[in-house]
Image (cartoon, rainbow, N blue to C red; front, side):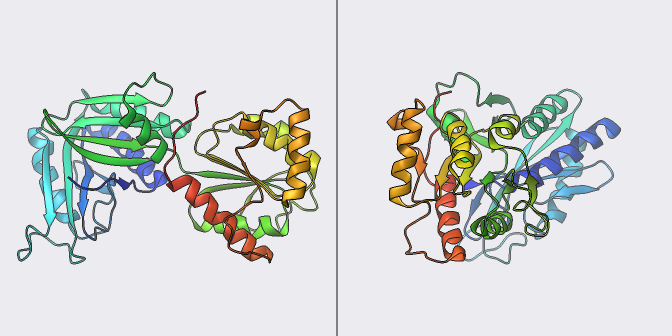
Length: 345
């Protein structure tokens, strides 16, 4: 069994699913290929997808170009016959190669036909979950393609399913009924920076570089200016007004950098009673002690206040704004990628 691996970019997966839905409406059937297992140095992670239309057009990737031609050829048979199959590409053993993966990896691909009977349910649920930033885990039995759908809001008894929502990882599992693929479709991480400060300028670019969604929130329009944050989404409403509209879900981080109590505190109050995966606030231990007292006076518990990382960032001895931004970014990544579970709603 392959090791669990984090899925491809949520946006890339979303593009594949939208293309599949469009071609399904037009042609009545498409072939969907999903990477369900990887070993060694595979160029596309578990959960990567590619859709093939009846005329040979395709969207997405399962190998970064190494075996797409083989998959398209197999898709022709799938489109005609309808029975799903599992394909393996790469190193078959220590000395023999099959098709195409010069990087030395091996991938297992599940290839299936989607038509009017099974396509709309899968594609519509997946597209809707992504558009509304709800997580979706799809459990597919590879021997026959039968599926179960799980949403984060469901009453989940299966700890494994809950963990896939938290981690965003997809995984191939061995069961008494054969191989089962758990495909975690979660929205991209989103970082909301409160305070258009110098540290915020640098952190916003790091967040963008990492591929996360980023919004900088500051009602002070002189600070939140396009010239200071090129290519970054800016919001000049007060945090208490805009955060409820944005929504603070388990894939969102709130980073308070304004260093102004009446701006930072309002954002922190909302974040502490949300499912945000990370809450951080700039300030020394002395300043955080004062903030803690303000929040206690406002009715927040020690457990709620304890969710705030402050002083913010991993302790690397950071002093300058760029170093502090790097320390914060490292802590964000650790919070996102490290072990975690969802808080009860």
